[in-house]
Length: 263
Image (cartoon, rainbow, N blue to C red; front, side, top):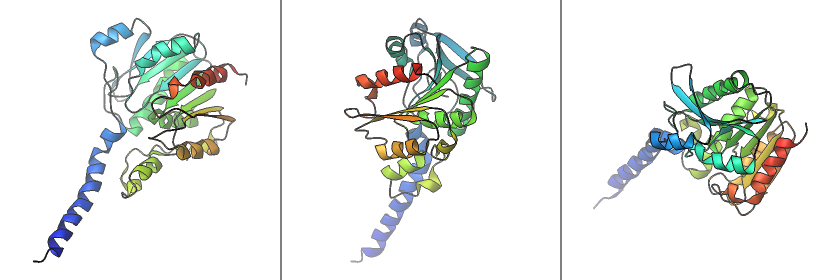
């Protein structure tokens, strides 16, 4: 009995199906929106002011605002509902202002996320911070996926400082690490090429990385850090994983020191 031809057909089918599945499902891997029920939003609003704006394409966007100085614009991870940060920033960085941004489709924001949309929305939130909230000193804070948004914004705007938690050189590079058998550079619609922007950013950088990061290997953070033009500080949290950086005492200590240091 000849098995060669049927086996080749099966292998060819698998070889075609896997890249197609990655291509069509990649948005679910990159973006995992976390909405907030209206009942929960009412409780959260007791901690911070709820701000809505309309994006240039008509999409209704949302952020949480805590008054203070300087103003930190926060962009979270790919599966993060940012209101969880409110009690932590109040406890660990009292007196600091925060604008915690809900990506499209996340929290109380409408719409569908994409690299292009998130970067454009970030620029609009920056304008809100300057023009409506009167912020004169702005710090950008990005976590994981959000570091790609922050780097793009820092490259195009005047900011005082940048904080990156678990950053990457590019999502293409990280995807290539996890899927070495796929031509991800041809397939990824949201590459978030931070490495290409870093050499032109002069703002001081605080880079916080997890020593046991299972999602973004440290080598990808290091490449971005080394390419950064401005002054920079590297803080490696040895016992942390990708989602447990905040549990390390050195995490908030480094952020507090960075926010108040002169220059």
